[in-house]
Image (tube, rainbow, N blue to C red; front, top):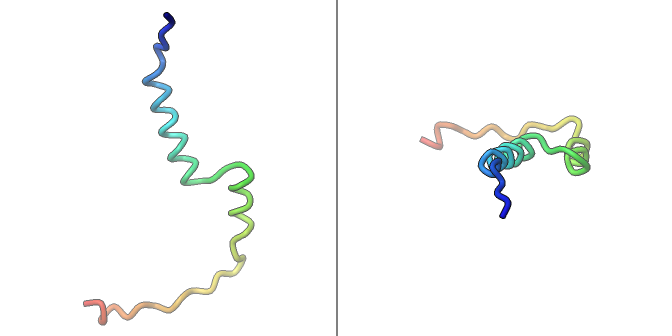
Length: 53
């Protein structure tokens, strides 16, 4: 029976690749998300901080 001695190391790489792909999407979906955002976003209303206290 063959055993993969790198299994633990590969699991760590998969975790980092998953985190990195969520931070900066790549591939076709990443290009779509980057170009689908509005070029001049308008700021929303500023919340009244005194009402929150």
